[in-house]
Each structure stands twice: as structure tokens, then as C-alpha cells.
Length: 201
Length: 303
Image 1: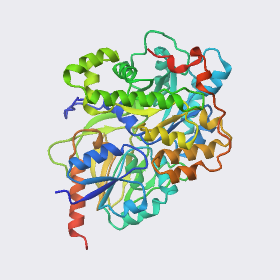
Image 2 (image 1 turned 180 degrees about the vertical axis):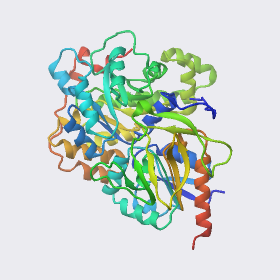
Image 3 (image 1 turned 120 degrees about the vertical axis):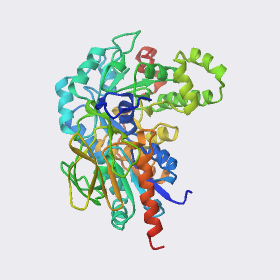
Image 4 (image 1 turned 135 degrees about the horizontal axis):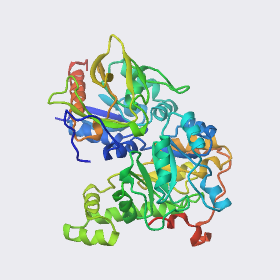
């Protein structure tokens, strides 16, 4: 059943991998670069990429405000790596003028696990994902310095928060889209289905 | 790439997935050559996804002549300190000690580059032995696959750096894409002969035939000078672009850099490209590639 349409913010980053993972998880997946395309999706993935670049392009092309409006309006949203940074209400060390979409009550530290030489793979247990740990791919990854009362911590690595959920928003430091394991995307598609089924239409 | 982690294994760094995955994060973006921390900041503010730290841009290497080498570590560290986006740096072809130095400095990607004077005219560096990932140039599919066999985690079509002329970039990218398309039509019997012809490992040739693309990210480089050039390379199938001399050899680098970023994202929207192309000031002065003597063609370096 492919009744649910999930967009992937396609300004920059590993968009194709998310489209593939979402399709494998049973959603109709499509890239989103314009406000009118955003208006047509049931949920949205903010992909991995460069958070400063994505944020600048979102402002430049008039997507930042529509994104905030839809996330505040309850649209299911999932951010990986740079996408996690974009969902944070606060960045610990923002570049000057770096804006976020916000929506998750957390403070994120960019590149917290280090530069590329420190990028790593590790097994990560994620609450809400059945069938054993997921294969976490961490690339110049951020971590969540602190999560607010509204945000549920669903995964940690080495004592640091690497995945959170708050209502219809999901964020991971790592990149499930770079593995063949689509369970985290499955969890997100289920969230989006649940929201759509319950929503007033 | 097929390694699976068991629960009791600790974190693993420097894996093929982590190296190739890093390049996936750069897709749809522009990587800009910079020679000072100030230029690096301009690039970052303009929306670059990464910067390439080097001592002289290719246009100046051409002009100055002499041996072009890895940059001064102080300069690279200054650039690393100035920006939060990834920093790449160039080593000479086959100069694995320059690459070791770059890895020790903590650069995020090493470009084993034909723009610098080659240190070895037979061998490239063994890139598997590094934690830092490598990007390498290629003019055709065989060359790309030989670099991937040596451990390159990202490929850029070479073009002709420092000319401001996109003609070679187009030639090389089309060549790679055409050869991939041709493999798609081959049956199993033919793939062995194709591997021999391409001078590339059979396993990689087979993988490309199945995927219909390289197993790593493919960018374009060498001659991009305008927003329309960048969009052209994207429409031809490049997943992103490197811009070398094109930005900081132009009249208004900050404006041109931002314009090329916009055109790279909306590469299929002529209206956006038109807007981005307005009032950019002077582009870099180009060089006609057919007047370049063979010995001054960087794309010929690499084996």
C-alpha cells in the first residue's frame, strides 16, 4: 500500500539514498525543492549534507518559513545528521546567521564526533526499532548535547544522545540511508501513516 | 562495503562505507578552491559544501610554471580553523608521503591531483591504506575504475583545470557516462573483454554494469566558470561540481560563488540560472584548450 507521500528536502545532500530507503519502506518518495512541492507531501525527510549549505539555500529559496509552519503544524519529519541539526531548536556552535527549522526541543553540537578521520560505523540500539541494533554510520556526525523535557531520547552511543523523537519529529545523528537496513525509515513511514490516518481531512 | 557489524564489535573508522558516505553528503553541492582563510570564509558564506585548500589556484600554477606541490601545513591548518565545512587538500599523484602529511593534519578528503606535478609516473598512491578518503580525477571510465580499485572513494571528471573553459569537463564527463551506458548493454561474456579493454578489475566493471553508475560519487571539475557551466555539468550527470580558479579569479568572488551554488541546486531550472547569472561582473579570462600544448594539459597526467 503506497498511500503515503514522503518528500525529501532536495537542496543538497544524500537525497537519492533517502528516496530509495523510503520507497523500500513502502512510501511514495519524491524530492522537494519548492514551497509548492512541500505543500503536497504527507511527511518530509531532511537528509544528510552540509547543514550550513542546506540552511542557506532554504532561506534563499523561500522554504524556511513554509518548513517551520509545516513542522509546527505537526507534519511528520525525520532528519539525519545535517537534518538533525536543522530540526534542533538550538545549535550549540552555529555559524553566524545559521538558521534552523527547529521543532525538536534539543541542543545539538555540530561535528561533535570529530572530523572525517573520526567518522565511524557502530551498532546502535534504537528504541522503537525491533530486531536488534541498527548499523549506525556516523559521518562528521553531530550529537545531542541536551534534550528537553518534550524530547524522548531513543538512542545513545558512547554516552552521547544520537537519536530523539518528539511527537511527529524524528532525528538521528547517523545515516540509516547509507545501509541496506530500512527499519528506521520504516518507523518514520509508520509515524507518518498514523498521523495521516488520525488527521482531519 | 558488505561488512556487517556485530553487536560486540567496537566502532570502526576509515571503512569504505564511511569514506564513500562522506562524498554522498556533498552531493548537489559546490566545492571551491581557496588559498587563504578569508577566501575559505567567503566560500562557506556563499554556501560551498567544502573547500579545497591549496597554495595557488590552477590558473596561477599555469602562469607561474615550476613544480607544484602540496600546500604549507600552516596554510591548511589556518583554513581548517576558519571554517566548519569539510576541508580538502591536494597531494601530488603517487606522493603518498604528502598524503600521509595531509591525513595527519586532519583534512577531510585528499585530492590526489593532476593539477600538482606528479611524483610518480607509473603508480598512484595506495589509497586503501589511509583513514582519510581520497578523490581522484578521471578522463574516462577505465581511469575512474583504476582509481577506485586503488581505494578512491569519490571521482571527479578532470576537465582542464585553470582554463575557465568547460569544454574538457564536458568531454570527460560525457566519456564516462557513455562508457557506463555502453556497459549496461553487455552480457556476462562481454564484460570480461570490457574489463580488459578498460584496463580495470572485472569485479568493478561488473558492478558498474549492474548499478548503471559508478560505485562512488561522481563530481565534475576543471573549467567551470559560470552558473550555467555548473548547471550544464549537473544536467550531464555530475552529482556536484568543483570550481577552482573560476571563483577567486573573477571580478566579484562572493557573488559568483553564491550564484554557482544556486545554479548547482536548481540546475534544471533555467529561470533560476538566469537570475543567478545576472550582474556577476567579470568571469575569469579563459584559455582556449586547443591552443594548449600537450605538455601543458593536466588531464594527461594519471595512469
